Image (cartoon, rainbow over all chains, first blue to last red; front, side, top):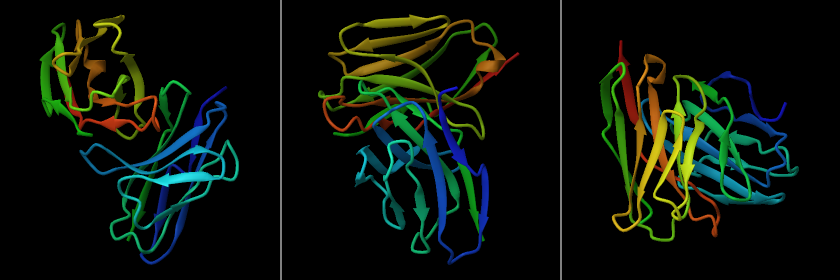
Length: 111
Length: 113
């Protein structure tokens, strides 16, 4: 059953702690993306990766880091430098012709 | 030039009616225009998409109309149902580049029974 999985679905952390969100895909897509969505808002691009071992900053990369060591995996770390980390985080991957598919999301709450 | 402007912000339609959401773009290099449907607490789902070589694409009750000269595209939902109540996002990308999707701000659709 092909798709994108994100774990966990809900994540709670104390302020000042780094936290890593998991994203795995078995669609054999080269490109993967991380977005942030705030309540009632659109999607903002954090980081994207076109190929293994390569990634670029999106529009709101400050306070976040990523790695792309495997084609299937694109984990996102929310660092303590991110001033407003509470949000809904979405991972996506895309085909060679640009069709982008999203995972179910991780809701991160930092208190 | 990278923006995609979406309207309206919210829309209320009666069951059986037609829902229309509009988007406008500026970058003429965009060549892929998808629409996503998102239910609360879920990831967006690709609904329908169009490329500029056609002016209209229909899938079931969902139709995209595309006007290349006006740099506008719209989503029409025919015979709208309460189950269509969701947030809809338009997007655009240049597939010859990094395939980065530029999203509109979203339209919250409510279909009343």
